Length: 366
Image (cartoon, rainbow, N blue to C red; front, side, top):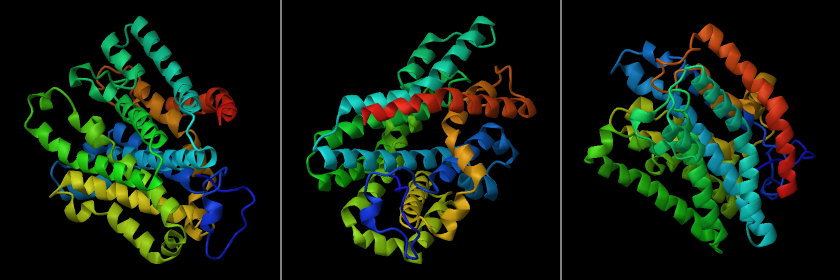
């Protein structure tokens, strides 16, 4: 969902009719991407190791800025944006061009991944990394979230989240493509969230819990994405009622309370706490999309945050080469003062010379 270039400032924000048109940019979302990738990088740089185990900070405060929280923010943004784009295409053309949709996804996701796999193969040739074709193949086909822990190559361990996202793209695009009633889509998303709460109960008693990481399987890992879907559908279906709510301070207060819920409930039900946190992110996204010219969004639009947001995908993909995304002890480049500048340099070069040129091709498949 993007905001038109010629949109004027308004005391009360943007009218929904403007918001739901095909547009070019959402102010504030790049900053959210930046915050999420900074959380992930801090976690993979080892900040979690500074926490005393089972302390109040580790249980209640760390979940606010952990790597998992960063991935959760990414997921909510993805669900929100993809749902909006699919709804707009369905509304404009009466159907969704699945071929063009997946070509756009390919052009977005694969160029940096090709660089990552090329570097990994070079590391293997130099005997800097372990050759594990099973892990490489599962990562390439976006199935790494189902890889047994024994196959978690440190350079690819973070690929589990990209697997969840791609599986969501397939599942959700099919649901929307073959469901003619928009009113049913929130129910589908809600059912998936419910499954994400119930299915893990079966994992706890299963023999494979120690061999796999079932919390990264599609259920329950996709729950924040579907929460983002519901947020986008809320705006679409509720119309001006959603706008009037967003113009009140109630929504932003609810978003803050939901995000910071781990301070109160994290110890008692971590999984539910994560769901509530994702709901807070979704509410905040709804609020900023309908208050585009408020002071909060202006603060989020600072240049350095926007820039980090723009290169966030490259930072996420390439971090496995430099940071501790998995077992980590095998990494050759892991001293933070060296690794972090190299990671940023590679992400910047990738953005300007690979991602940005390729993304111009996406417009041919709109």
